[in-house]
Length: 69
Image (tube, rainbow, N blue to C red; front, side):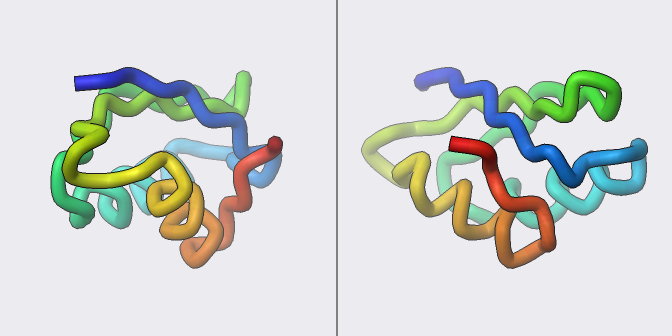
């Protein structure tokens, strides 16, 4: 498993974190670890053999939370 922290400037509350958690954990090999609305970050563990970071970013964007690059 690999770990990644992604910053999404549109995260503003715990509801945002819950929406992201629900969406990204539908991807194979993704485990949600934590989210922080004040830092606008989420930390995930993922299996790089099952999913790429770009796919996680795409799902977050589809939920309305584009990742800052």
